[in-house]
Amino acid sequence: MIAFTNEHDLYVMSDDGSSKRRLARGQWYVSGPAWSPDGRTIAFAGTEELLGDETIHVMSADGSGERSLTEPSRPEGSHLDPAWSPDGQMIAFRVRSGEGDEIYVMNADGSGLRNLTQTPDIDEGSPAWSPDGHTIAFSRARYPSNGEIYVMNIDGTGLRALTRPSDDFDWSSPAWSPDGSMIAAISGDAYYGGGIYVMNADGSGLRNLTQSDDDLNWDPTWSPDGRMLAFARDLGIGHDSDIYMMNADGSELRNLTESEGEDGEPSWRSLEATGD
Image 1 (spheres, rainbow, N blue to C red):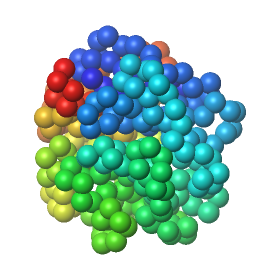
Image 2: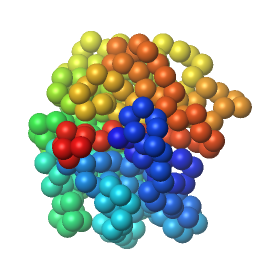
Image 3: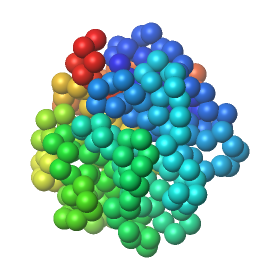
Image 4: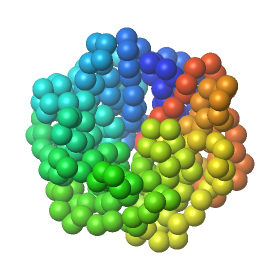
């Protein structure tokens, strides 16, 4: 099952694009759905106030029991990009404020909040836990330089770059393969997408899976078996973005949604984890 956003709403669908249903409607904005490792809960960022700061919410997989884990004033700013630890005990997320974007972690009930990056002059975002739970991959950019993919230990130490500074590559949205051997990421504009690349977990072996300069792609997510990637794609002016799927080598591209409005931010649920 895949969770995704359409305009301001949160939907789920089967892996083949069938059985779409809406789980949550944000009056103004819902973003960044993320399945818990056991597949029973979805975390997401949302706000019901015009121009309000997003906060991190969770709800059951059927859309019930929605509740907020954070408040805009703690820490101050918009709270975005929730990502579960592999054991389901913690959630990492991005805090966007006037001083820059930083990565925080908290317990899954919203307690134990702490700042991992503490670098207000550098923008960090899109945290992604490694499957072994030991490291977090994320994007990191110091204006005016382009973004890069970094990893750090879960306490914020051990910072190291996986990509190199470049005028041609602006990296964002890292996603670990289920076995932890590879990372998919976007190279292009952080807001409007670019090409989908994969690299080894140490940053080597970089290759482009989408091979198109005309289409914009973003938000890659791996299937639970690591054989496929789902992502959002925009074919350009006159087209709405849809959720696409392809094999992990870039072959057999197919559109899953073909719906009105802007589809984006897919998150793949592990059916094995729930026994479905």
